[in-house]
Image (cartoon, rainbow, N blue to C red; front, side, top):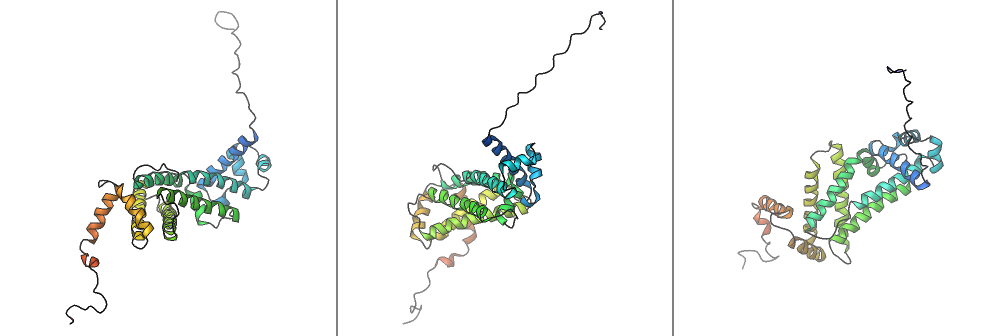
Length: 263
């Protein structure tokens, strides 16, 4: 009874959210996403199927239903999903100076590394109990795809062995620098690491151009698009300052048998 002597109106229960059963693909995607979140911050051997089930708010038997091979199968599926995302980091329109394109690629790549720190380290350093020949092939596929994207930006129809080696060496350097960056508590800042790796690419390309005609043509075409006040222009001036006192390196040695003062 209320103060007026009448019974209060009965409360209408709040409507429950409609339950929708996930499709097979949606549920599988949900489980992979939950696993990726865990693998991003913990080594694979530290993650159990119970952890994945709890993160996805499902039962352990349901995880096994979708991944009867257990954690190795789930890890491989999660790794393949992460590899697809990592490959997309290297997809960049072929417009503008090469240094700007590389910087955009590295921004995405280092963002991925930052988000998946522990998982990225475990993935590239190997040694995980969840690692198999198939997971190794997935990682190698990312490296080859990355190299392919970079070679496309160099606009070379049939890159020779030296140019291919240069690009793959740079990809390896990017991986190594990323792992060191994580080990150093993400210092220096990602933007500085990005700029340093762009400088590294330019230096490798120019060094390769010194002994390879194809690389020389690529370097000239790439440098022609760079601005004096841009990344590569600043690098050129810094390098010039370093070597300015070593002008003797530019002097050609006397030809054999042509000794100065000899008659």
